[in-house]
Amino acid sequence: MSNQKNMPKEKGLDHTLSLLQEGYQFIINRRHTMQSNVFETKLLGEKAICLSGSEAAKVFYDNDKFKREGAAPKPVQKTLFGKGGVQGLDGEAHRHRKAMFMSLMSKDDLKEIRQLTKTHWEKAAKDWESQDEIVLYEEVKKILTKVACEWTGVPLKEEEVEDRADLLSEMFETPAEVNLNHFKGWRARSKAEKWIETLVEEVRSNDREVEKGRALYAFTWHKDHEGKLLDENIVAVELINLLRPIVAISVYIAFTGLAINQYPEKVTSLAEGEEDKLQWFIQEVRRYYPFFPFTAAKVKETFTWEGYTFEKDTLTLLDLYGTNHHPDDWDNPDRFEPERFAEWSGSPFNFIPQGGGEFDIGHRCAGEWITIDILKESLNYLVNHLDYTLPEQDLSFSMTEIPAIPKSKIKMTNVKRT
Image 1: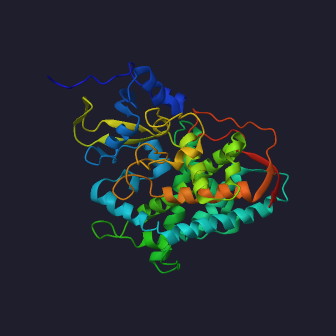
Image 2: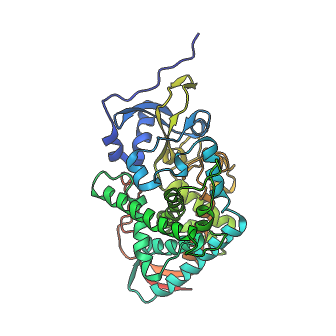
Image 3: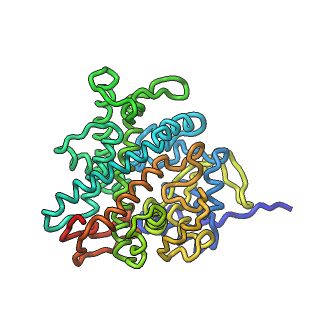
């Protein structure tokens, strides 16, 4: 007797508009109505399979079953990832390029980025004391632009900070837009690549000196799995794939500010700045609040899982937000409980705010450790080194906007360092 099952299928010609209208809830809504962690729909005129939950994530990150090449929609590629970047590679090319990123994640590298974060928070807070009001999200984008450029070796003049911060943030603030905002993101990507390409050309022609330990130097002289120097545009794409995600941590910091306000009873335990408790809190911020809704791949070769057939080249989406809130994987998933991470097993498949799988051989974000260290330092600064008032404002956020950001972007008054 065959174990083949008919995959639950959404009726209708195409559901791209529904995805844009429902945002983070698109896969969750259908998972509930179909009572299934796997179902078929139609997006951008083609069949697509949607997955949710840790068991589905294990399959999705099986490199023998799925490939990333050609999976990201062109609008996302043109703004968020760039063409030819590590996110779209597979096999040996992916492993070799991923190793280039992982080489920057030593303990000393992470210690330095955390120190840079603390330094630039302190410098910014000193300026905030003389201002009537600051908008945390906008200010943190500038802080993280400075951190990212200094850490990677990318030169940045003080008068350039705001423009560079806007340039890098427009790429992650507009990937799902279908209006003029998407053009802004595409234009930002183009300008950013030209900016970094110029630096790469200067380094290769010995017109610019850069420390050997910096990403600008390492990426400029990196050779691919065939022993060839990367094309200057690819170097630019990959350097932006460090700069942009670091600046995107500003979204998490805005939600951290919101969590401090919404759950003050969870903040009292952070007064001593204990590493473990800081980490539990920011991990729960990353699990609880929306960041990126899903990630995409294509079926490598036809296979069967749980009785369902996955046909070769079928677009497949893994629900990141929904997996982080899946009742099969989390107790009380819709409650903000940092203490849940005190006993968390560390599974690479049930906690996937920036993607899942293993770091070295899989597609898990190479910058996740950077994210954690920057967030811990930022949380500690907000809780233990800063006094401020949150005036009346709209702290709500929309689950249909990608990325979701608190409407007011966290306004602060009476800012004083402690």
